[in-house]
Length: 263
Image 1 (cartoon, rainbow, N blue to C red):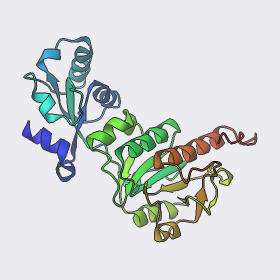
Image 2: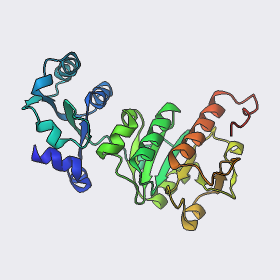
Image 3: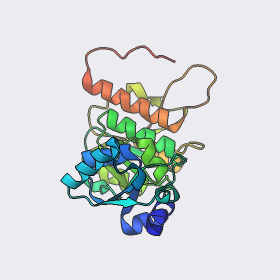
Image 4: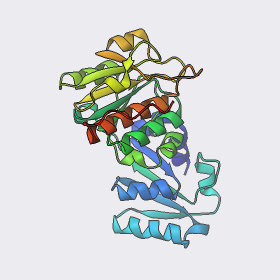
């Protein structure tokens, strides 16, 4: 159990062993639904016969996944979540190489996005809008740490996720014909004037400082989300989500004018 606790705590171990820990029945079920490769599932002995855990056990057995019952209190000492979870799962990292992400539709690149909540929100929005993939670059949060995994609400199993360098990621998609857009707080072209019908890479920057000039210069052009009111900027999760849903709207309906701004 010490290894599981270290996998929860240490990014370096997660990556060296290509394994991460899922906390809670919802994430474990989502991974089973997506046929993610499991190492094992661990269940609190006091919950072993509950309906919820029973479903997980039967699904796991059907997929050839080992299930272990642990003494009461053991899982609480492993898990990161404040609320005790009756189920944990150890899975192989569901990681996709950048070059294996199709150059089509919308690709979100998270550069130096440090907050697990923002990262999880962007993965959920990518999933909800049918984005082709999400790439983490720079000093971004680990997409497979417990907080990020919880924030994705299982969407991390539905959309390809990669980790790479910003320059290498952009080069990979540009050489395959994509347009690259940098999000900036002000001075860019309105994000609603872009054409997202073809392969488009959108780079979302750090929550506090955004994208630096060097990163912006790597992209074809910059885009800005127009706002009214006194707010200086949107948080990274909201900004990326707005762009993702604009891209979805364009793919669904290219004949009507855009809806009126709600801000």
